[in-house]
Image (cartoon, rainbow, N blue to C red; front, side):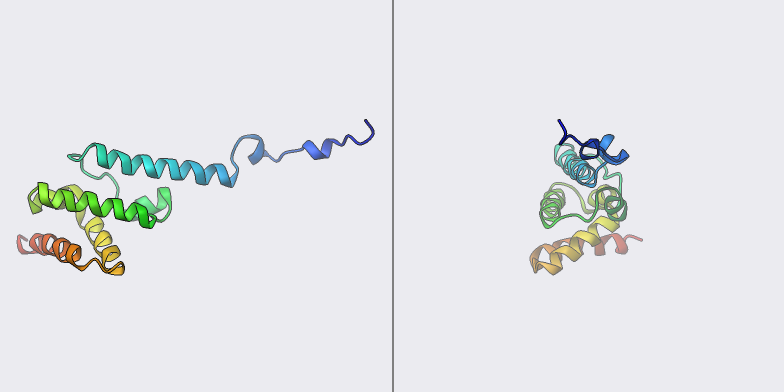
Length: 124
């Protein structure tokens, strides 16, 4: 019993109340994945936040996130009119996903997204 030391069991407030950095990062990841999952489940819903708000809430999207978003966007391009796609995704997301696809050299997808974006500017 002489080896017992209370200091070995002391916790700071963040650890005591579950606010550790690991827990926070895990929660953000779960929320990010739920957001993307909702986009998959409800294809008719307008995306409620832009890319910068996404980053503020969930951190930078991963490559996998952007690949999923690209597939959702291309699915919408084939299912809806270009105006409906712009209304749902907004120009910010369209340009963000376009830039990602430029980086990964998916030029056919880039051409498709650019066509949708350009049509928005023709109508104005």
